[in-house]
Amino acid sequence: MPRRVGACLMLAAAAVLVTPAPAQAHVGGGRFATDYEARITGLVPAVAGVRAAIRAGDQQLELSVSPPHVVIVLGFAGEPFLRFSSAGVAVNRASPTATAARVVSAADAEPPLHRPAWRRVSSGHTFAWHENRLRPLTVKGGRIAGSRAVARWGVPMLVDGVPAVLRGTEWYAPGPSLRRWVILAAAIVIGAAAAAARAGAETLARIAAAVLPVVVAAWLLGWIGILLTDGHGARATALAAAYAVATAALVAAVMMATAGNGRLAAAALLGVVAATFTLPEVSAFFHGYVLSALPATAARAAAAVSLAGGVALPVVCAPAIRRLLAEDPAMQDLISGRGVRS
Image (cartoon, rainbow, N blue to C red; front, side, top):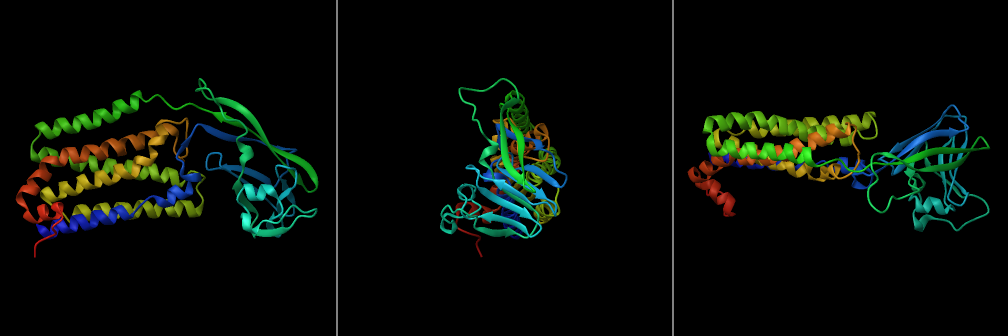
């Protein structure tokens, strides 16, 4: 039994290492939800081969320019900021906007000059940057009833020397009603507590075996949605697939390395891990827009099931954990910090 317990703890610890940190970096500023969303109306006048997209909610503007077009994005003061050409993308180091957008560091910036100080930042033809003009208005004085456009924005540019403006709107949406999500979470946890108080050991084992895959699936679904927030590109898809496979493999290894009460203890620990990893997604219940490839309701449902199910698993497995502690002195030593006796 000590070996099985040790394996359970080691493998569960390994599961903790499969963190969703890449997803946190993937979403702008570590945000998972927002009350605002920038939407593109279009380039005026429209030009074939010049495409724009909003990334990370409304934190980044991405522009793609197909050669041989030359596009110069103008900054806040009307100065040349970015240049898209057949040679790639270049930034004007003398542009104050370049520093404000963090495309150029303050140490690398040039003082304002009569002529641009271009430096290439990409050899490709697509580039994304932090664009403050996507959010021209902040709603104050309480929530607005319902989702609606609250402001318009525009980013001026020169397309092959001709003035143009990328136009769009800023939308605001209040957070959802919490009632149904609280009811769902409470029902899961209360049901688990009732089962732990009345059901026998075999029934609790079957409940845990049924709940664990659902919790892990919800946990993975939520984070895959976050990883794929800005589309289904090869890199994002590969990262999401690797995260799902690695996590599922570790969960399977933990369960295969244990048996009896030890397996239920492992299920409880994995539930805690799932709930802990889902905690950052709680913001989705307080903001109108969820930064996920999933529909907002699906993303919130995945988070609710992962959180509530992750709490329910230790509750269901509590009797087995008590039996494990009572029967295994080595486990008691581990819990108390004295280590496994040789």
